[in-house]
Image (cartoon, rainbow, N blue to C red; front, side):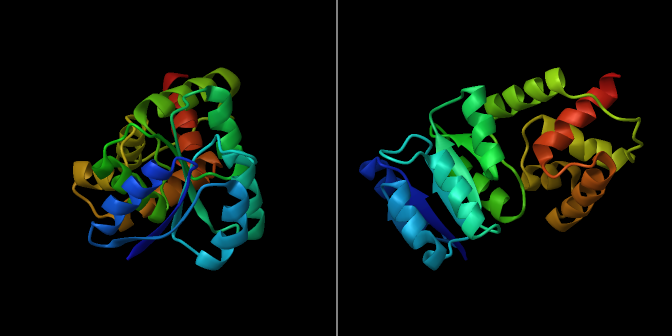
Length: 209
């Protein structure tokens, strides 16, 4: 059972998300908050597996809320759910500790998939968001050295570069999610990174250099 909490000042949207989360086997919405202040007060006690967080809340922003939540509980997994595709907002959210960044226009099925991906240790992003992040890394980063990847590791990275989730990558390569996690750990070690986003950016630079 994956437990979910929602932080968004749009009450109808919160209720809509909670309804399809609770209506799906293996998921349960344990709480909803319409302000960052309330979320900070109660989420550490709720202990959800995944928090869905809007950026622009009345009062404290979602980004500041993420930063404070991570200071309280570094293991808390937060998925930003927003209408904003602004690169600056994306990086602020990720720097604050968000595990992923997806757009509200996602279908319910895709949102549940993103929740699963965060729960499994992934960093889901809408494809348009992933492209912005990768492009930004390409402009600002340079690989330190040539890195050798196995053919399977390259396949995993290519799938991530297309915006695919852990599950989609596992299905594409006909291997288990646990095997994907093993490849990801090796990739992170080789590239000296801590997220799938950084891994894809460095890999693409490495491939093109």
